[in-house]
Each structure stands twice: as C-alpha cells, then as structure tokens.
Amino acid sequence: MNVAIIIPARLASTRFPAKPLAPLSGPDGVARPAIHYTWAAAQAAAATLPGNTQCVIATDDARIADACTAMGMAVVMTPDSCLNGTERCAAALGGLAGVPDIIVNLQGDAPLTPASMVTAVMELLAARTDLAMTTAVVAASPAVLAHLQTDAAAGRVGGTTAVCTRDGRALYFSKSVIPHVTPGSTPIEPVLLHVGLYAYRPAALTAYVAAGPAPLELQEGLEQLRFLDAGLPVGVARCAAPAWEMIELNNPTDVPLIEAELARRALAESH
Picture 1 (cartoon, rainbow, N blue to C red):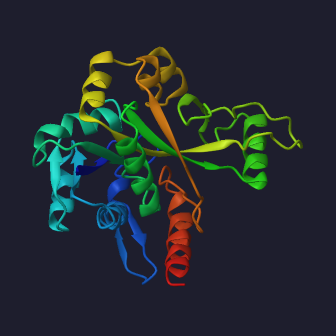
Picture 2: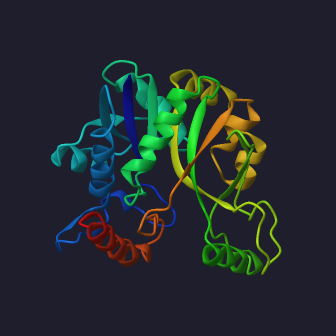
C-alpha cells in the first residue's frame, strides 16, 4: 500500500505568526525549527508502515519551503487560498510521487504526535473500506475532564471532543464537552479527546473540496465536520494516551511547555 504523510504548514497564523519556524530546544539543548520535530514524527511513523511511504511538507510560503528544503525535507507548494489543512492536503496531491492509496494529515503544529497514532489511523482506514476518513481520539482522564469542564464554565475552549457509534463511526465533534457529563459525576463512557490527525482516501479529499465549507464546520471551527455534513463516513481510532502531553504549538506561550514535553518524551522512549 502506498501512503503519503503530508504535513500542512502555513506562515500566516493569527495567534502565532511563522510558528512552523519558531525555534524549539530539544532534549539535547539544540534549538531547531518546530517543523523539524513534526517531520521527525512523520519519519518515525513512516518507518513503521509497510509498503511505500513518502513524507512531504505542504505549504504556501516560500520561507517555509526554503527552510524545509535546507533541512532535507520534501516540499510541495500549495495555494494560499486553502481554508484548512485538509484542503491543503488535497491541493498537494498533484505534487506527490504517484497517487497514494492513503493520505495522512499530520499537522505541522503537532510535534508531539506519537508514531503509533499515525499508524493507528492509517491501519483503521486500510481495514475499513466503508470509511472515507479516519481520525484519532484518546480517553480523557478524570483530571483532564475536570479541566475541560472548568474551561467550559469559564467560557474558554479547552480542547475538542468527539462522540461515536459502537462500531467506531464518528457522530459529531465539538469544542464543547460532549456528551454532557455532570461535574463531579463519573461518565458511563469516557469523554473522548480528539487528536488533530487524519487519514483519507484520495476520493474523499476530492469530495471534501467539492462540497465546500459546511455551516457547522464554520460555527465550530472544526474542518472534519465537513466530512460528516457531506455524508462521508468518518472512523475513530481509540488510542492510548502517550506518556507525555500532546500539546500543540498554537501560541508563543506553548514553546516552553512543548520543550518540556520533548524532554519527557525522550526520557519515556529511552526506557
């Protein structure tokens, strides 16, 4: 099976401009661009996959392209009109070496994504021909659930949650805590935290772009809702939470947090 791991990366982030190139100090004390760590995660995942796997950066900015090329990464240029990472993956298809059977979207601001999750979403899609796309979730611990509920009560967005059927099809994704759990009570089923990692079939990406933005996608600010709105089945891979926090690089204040987790990950992987 031919797999392409695409890392969408854009320079024009409102909260953190040029974040793919923001320096992050690794466990060895050397500062490298943030995209370096996401590329390393893609390479680690590719090494576990059977068949032919190619990894590419999909960007609309020459500065990111030049920096990534200098670091030995493959780059595909995409239009600046792409509305989200999924549209950028679709735009990158024409620049790949051949047409892949499966495309994995590993977001450029998620350097702490474990290779096992990339494998999980890809394998689920390969095994389930009824699915157009797959994504990953982890069960929220009681402490994490309490944190989500506290954020919700204060009007803050603390993460994206998902609900799915018994056979693993996604029903909905939200920046609210779903399903409702009364604070202090024990949920019948754990609240599922969504991880921004996707695997698609090429035809699903084509259908996604053709469908255009969906109202719920725009209201929630969640690109994956367009698949559900278009009637494209989404599978959910339930993954074990890693030994480190999967903090995304969304704000400058996330830099020291991610650096600390990179050190924790290196320690966990050494044992």
